[in-house]
Length: 464
Image (cartoon, rainbow, N blue to C red; front, side, top):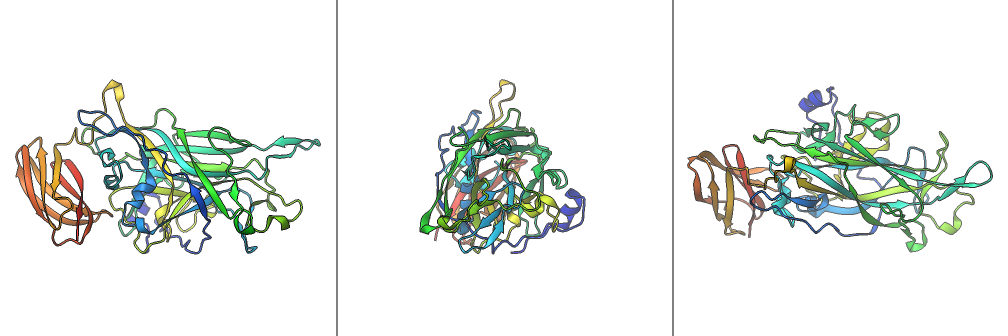
């Protein structure tokens, strides 16, 4: 499934007609994830009626798992390295170099896939303003070097640095591939990345974390597996949450027409081990027998993250929403290649890549007013779908607050419209509509009822 940037978007949002090409990383080395803490963010306050605001964690990988691409999702780890030629020596002696300098994720809380998670009531509408409270991500932090020579006959501690940048609203641009799959990136490609420093730029705010030896309260050193007689063959990762800076609010409006309703973050690692420019011999990962390592082998520290690859036959094709993983690969950190520079959308890879990420958001309570619930500002609400699951015929019970033109649309889990019905002008009140879906294949679908400018959705299962 080849994905190419739409020419219209290339001209309008990139300022160039150059096509951003899909990246074939199907032959990339896979790194074993020995274990990862399960989702630690299960406590939440669900969205209620009467305007009580939602305040909840959203698990990006759970969303992807519940899509049609979910069956092909496989878990690995990958590594962030600083900008030097530090080496990765594989268990067969093959030498590679660090390939990723920064990663992150853009989040869309309006995504219909939230309907298929454990907390479907937490899907926001286009009328919901919200704020980003915290972010979290899977990580592993390996310190091979705790101290280096200070040049005066003594030692000085090595302090590594992790930079977490935040993005919101108009800082995020939306685009799509020719198959309709949507994705987002921070700013214009020429504005979101500084190639001379290999660092993000144009963000709303950035946190800086100094990483020293042992437990530091936020990111702890992760020791690696020494299985099969080799060194660093498998990794146990952790999850760390970070309070987002104040002021990261995403504002909707009363008409629901604000398109800038996304938020996101990225993280970038810089090692405190000095770089030898042009001739670096440092090894950040060594998978050979450690007893045979060369004497005095120069080491470096590194930072890893949870990487999920879609290795199935069904691609990720969300044509309505913009959840996007962001990957800053080393070649693209220095120059524009095939239309990409700095961050590359995870959907641009042949085996689509997703970064294990979590977002905690709250519906905004500006000026002391309570946030609105999912349907509080909507003029239409689906009360029930019966039976659910169904074998084909379902009755949709819904209510409208004002007289409106009513239409029904049915979508599969990748956002394709598989059935549409127009019921014309309908007075305010409660109705029950029979919908015949016997022509559709068994599976999970989303029923969407629109009245005027308002839409309500619910998940429906069509059984065998």
